[in-house]
Length: 400
Image (cartoon, rainbow, N blue to C red; front, side, top):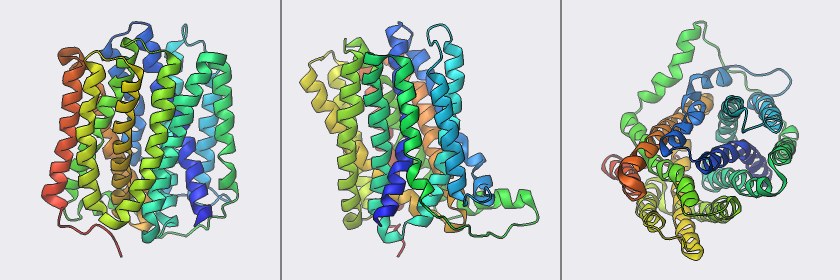
């Protein structure tokens, strides 16, 4: 069990390292250059590969790279490409070649999303149902630890040693996280290939969508994290407007708050086993929705650091628990033979809701102010909880 958790922790850490750095650093840089909230919100198109990756997930389910295992081979290839792109970004003059940076960032998100397809499929096949509570806590914790390094540690390095060396260090860390993968001897299970390629491509999607209450579940996925991504997109520009420095934002949001999310993810992993998936989704989702309203405090003009720390720690702790519950419920919806497609389809729907919410967040903040935007983001998350309560509160999601 321990070797499984180390492997998953390393992989989920790696994919969030550069993407969190880019998605958190660039909005701060843009706001410091007095760019509009609309423009910052539109930057969320970079996570479009995460929303559309279900389109190529059947290929990763169907094909494998010879001598490297099935999902293991794809992980190695895409993570190496991710490290190379990150290393290349170190040599870009971001002030004079911002468009080139955006293209490289898009490639980084593309490779990270593709690595995530294979990693999620590997996790579905690796973890037994009874292991999924703690396994998903490690998944969530790995994501957050990557965000701590990329969105906190490297952000502080950026303030002290500059762009070039910060990204070189980050690319080296990503290569180190590949070490557990090389020691994992994944067996290749030969899967029956249908003669009709197009039929075999669409069949996993048709099968998933034909399941009972599939459409209400997709609606939950669109909304559940949408509110969090909406508020998270505008939080950093808000803190810039409140006069916080790059290092202060990096420590608060990139290290302290994300560290709290790791702790809360493991707490959630234990509680999910006792409460069940649906009860956890409802309770944690409700708490996270209400907690989002605490962002109204800095939006109203408060810039006192202890108060800001208290707000961000509280919100992130509850959001981390909700996110872990969602991951566990999503994994239960997967078939082992089409794990990459089933899980990736759900993740893509989550990101579709997140991309839409994030891109709208700038327009909403411009129209209503930060306070109105945070109220709307809380309402979006709360709506997802109501859908869960209406359609799934009597459904036993856990597989025995």
